[in-house]
Length: 103
Image (cartoon, rainbow, N blue to C red; front, side, top):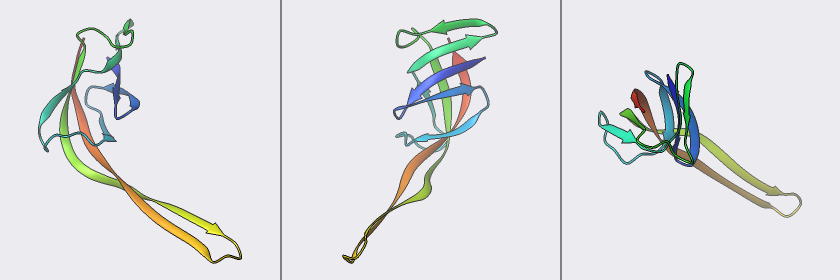
C-alpha cells in the first residue's frame, strides 16, 4: 500500500514505515499528526485518484526530528569590477516516519 501526499509545495510517494525529510512542519518531536492532502492511494491494485484530493484519506506520521538541510551557497561575481557577493542558506526540515495510511 502506498500513497502520494502533498506537503510543503512538493509531492511525495510514501509507504508505511518509510522515513523522509519534508519542509518544516509546526509540530513537536515525537508528536503524531495527520496529513490530509492525499492525492492518490493504492492498495494492491485498487487505486483511488483524487480530484484533486482523495475524500476521507489521511496519512498519519510521527515527527522524528526538526533538522536543518545542507548549506546551499549562492555566489555572484562580475569580473574586473571587484564585485563579489556570497550568501548561504540552510533550509529547515522535518524528519517524519509514516505510521499509517487511512483511505
